[in-house]
Length: 481
Ligand code: NAD
Image 1 (cartoon, rainbow, N blue to C red):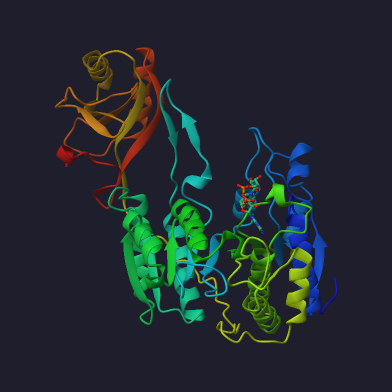
Image 2 (image 1 turned 135 degrees about the horizontal axis):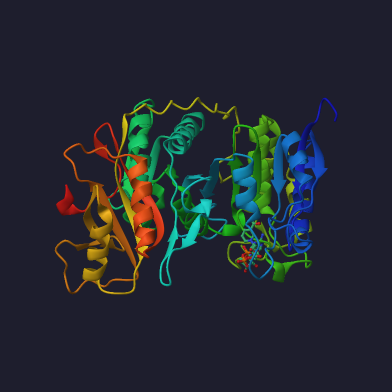
């Protein structure tokens, strides 16, 4: 590797991927980016030769030894059994922060929201994307929403550091902590704690449903928004679309030891090989990459050349409009126009200035050492007969423990059964200590399960009930408190 050049991995992907990557690399080279390109193959061909995540084992070494990964979109083959390449790369390389600027380029690209300039920062490794799912009974499927305090601290701190480094004024948190008190509750709580360390930034929180409605209605009221993985996945596409086009947005996936940059759109197979695709999303991702690598001058030069091209009305088909556009061009001609504009500034759109907007991956606060006690267990039992029979069987197996509650899909159905409640074939059966002393032993849980098995109960899963510093950290039904 040359000492003057920064090594990056490059994947041209599938569908329109090779065309938009060709255009992007041409612009990077013409702008004098000091990069050394290491091609890697990912996507459809790799999936079809039997790699379930669409990436060859040897490719990880290249990704590990390069400073960034510039990735074109790939096609996921039809049919089951294929793992998401993006999720695999993000989680395997620890790329915990997904950064997606959603900007309007009014009046040159049609938008309902001139002035929109929102950055969505999405947590990338946790939440429902861990993909931990189970079928627990004939009828019931569970997916696990995994939220860690460490993950929340990392992403929330990243959002505030990003805001400070990029002269942003406000960071908004979206969560659903009115329902998900422990998982989303932790995200919100960590947001409140960390926001206090950044007095120059205005913190704000919205419940995600009304927050999403406000984002779609008045996106100009938002600045930086930080969210857990699933909300961020959905709302970053909404935000990019209402800004103008998903074809214009790039995104960065940042970790402590690596980073991946890509357009947010897919491989658009029907447009492939026709010199039609808009390379802007991937080019804007490449600009984010140059920033990440510290080459602010080249990032600024390319960004301004691109803004000038857009402003001059040189547009690919996806953003071409008779009234505002001047020339409809293909992928290659668009790239050539950006190259021609290198060194120029836009006249009406705000010129880009990339300066040192790097920010540190600050050390994560050590989780506190709370006193943990086992106080009970929820046993999920598949049962197709009546509730009374179930209760009698469970009470007979309880012995040193006490059956305190039976729930079904989150609703308490015993004690105080309501005839109207719809039930399914999986029952959450809660056992706690019989004694005054609340704490129980793991051995008592194991023995309870043995007795249940002997009685022929099919327990599909269990969840231990823990108190931390005397407070319950599991869902407690209203009249149990
Ligand atoms: P898509 O984003 O590929 O296409 C959606 C629409 O946008 C199509 O009409 C397409 O023609 C248009 N479009 C997308 N990018 C464009 C561009 N640069 N220029 C002009 N028009 C553009 O979404 P899809 O059709 O749902 O998915 C196609 C394939 O891409 C699927 O195999 C999917 O799994 C994959 N995909 C990959 C990624 C990724 O690699 N990051 C992301 C999303 C989808």
